[in-house]
Image 1 (cartoon, rainbow, N blue to C red):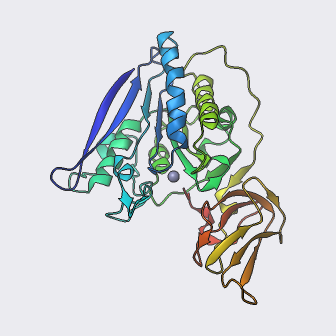
Image 2 (image 1 turned 120 degrees about the horizontal axis):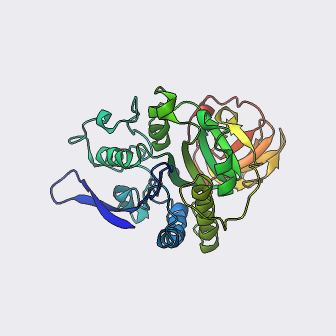
Image 3 (image 1 turned 180 degrees about the vertical axis):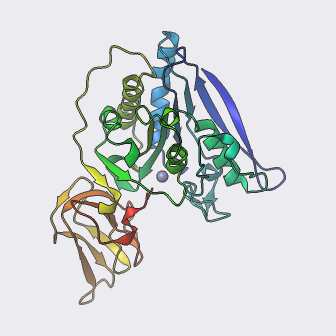
Length: 351
Ligand SMILES: [Zn+2]
């Protein structure tokens, strides 16, 4: 395994950002290659500790000459966000200088060719970082971007062109649900990793062996040794299943049996009032149309001081907020519905 340090120039003299990249060499030219990154949203740490738990497994495989395809690992993908604190609170989701979401505005290339990347020498540090992450990952057969939600199940975003071929990956990783999406106009990292393959010859696109997913490892607070160990095992199983690592001792696992939900079915449930949230449901709960999901206490102690929110359709709770304060119009939770949502925003990749 080789470690190198990537350096991204900052936007003023004396400022630069660094992040480490680990590379395992593959011994078999025909084997698929893999790229894993975590903490692009810099405060989302379940994937960081999962990679930490995965590394000794890969080191053992390397020592035993079982790494077949090359593996690139970026455990802290966002040194800019990692360093951002505002009044003592970490801010890892948006660039404070530009208000841009760190997982938006990635270049969506017409083909998997790094020469098509835009010139970002004067584009700002976060655009330089995004270009570099695309360069590091482009061409890998397997691209995993490890995130987490506020509070949620372990679920995967997968582009429709890769489903159901990726069902083995969802099973290997122990995902509890899969969300299928088809359009990305915002430039997520996942979009930047799959859009370049949409209009190229089949021999280049290789959708039979391509894996691209945003992995949502539950919630922000699910940074835990036991979960990290089981998530690392899931990542390892995926690498073995897809032939990147050789390991005959990995036990067989069943088919993916969880729900597969088109993004059009997600109800985001905007809060009708600002206040304190009393949830009736948690991630994983099954609900029926008309069930109460939450009560907003907006004018405490007064008659009519509460507003209840009900399920617009039947389905299950995918995520909810980790904090209990909310403004009117902010989303209360994600309800994965059995049918198409009436909410026009539901079709977007909302990581
Ligand atoms: Zn995220």
